[in-house]
Length: 132
Image 1 (cartoon, rainbow, N blue to C red):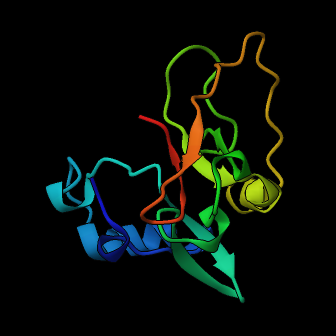
Image 2: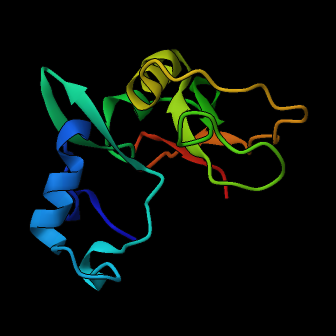
């Protein structure tokens, strides 16, 4: 599972060129570039620069009590149906998170969206986490 120090945020127009520079054009993709995604990491444009956001330590997940936290899909639209990954955010940060990961993407409505798990405030880290 990649960590924030092992990934780089790249602007969408430059993603293909960056991937070719790092991985080359070999087929199949080189193992160093084929890594599983960590749902706690995403790329965002902050202060005019692409940056890697680690939700485990980001201000958008800082909390003091459980009722400040909510779980949602880590990607823009999320899965329609059971299962799928979830991340925990502070309730008042959900709109800005959605703006970061979705941009202008419009998501189709699910007929039966999955029920998100409970999100709690970790007493040690003081950040929202998905309850075990």
